[in-house]
Image (cartoon, rainbow, N blue to C red; front, side, top):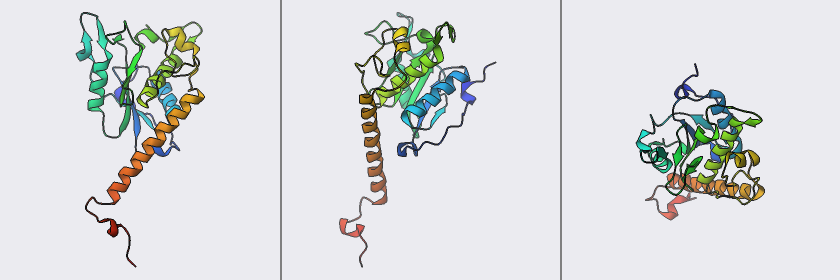
Length: 224
């Protein structure tokens, strides 16, 4: 029997990224998943974004997002709840579910993300179907690509015109399989810019903590 994802606390390798020291990316499975799949996604995220990544379920279920007319689950509602319950140490949160996701303007989605926000979600429903075996296709790798794609949106990356780029918009599972599992050069630059901006914001917060708000400008310096 597959262990519960709630009990999974895989060890993560130490990241050399300054951004990773006080933040982490949290993977929140909705139910039980093969730990091999979760680990492959976790390692892919750490490699792509440089943040320590852990697995911890945040939601008991996603039934609150069910739309009886469409017989699907509204992904945007799930994202809002994820962002609301995310712990302070979680810089980004990725949910993984088996339910069929939708947004009102589309028939279905593989996943969704808050652009420049905290939360994103992917579903195995259409990307994997009943299981991990399809002749000539690594479905776990497909899921890992989609996980990194949606997380890319939370770092403000938008869809890329390069069909080989990880951030390229995919209309079918075949499109996901065709593209690389890495960002193109242009999107890598955009990601680095986003991470540098994060570091600058964190440095500003640390400086404000060191300098109490009521401290006079002249008192910041020692008097000899």
